Length: 122
Image (cartoon, rainbow, N blue to C red; front, side, top):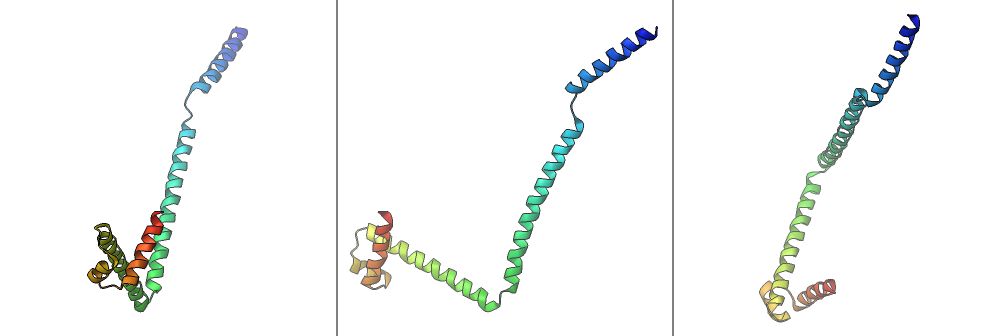
């Protein structure tokens, strides 16, 4: 009788061992979820630190610095508009002199701007 019990226990242990290989590992799934949450937390923290650094830099800037940045941006925007206007007139067949009159620029400024544009195309 003891022999049968021992054989049954060995058989049962082998069966459980085989089943353990096919069973899902719940802990492994939880570990993966924790890793994903940790990665997203780290990414969000990094983004927040970047935004905070930008805000700190802006707060440390004086009003004059801010106005200078605004002036530079406005100058860049107006230069871009002038460039687009010159290119548009050039593409429509206007001469350098005609473009200069239309844009209130000198002929030399128009010539230099168009040379930069044409060099950029080649």
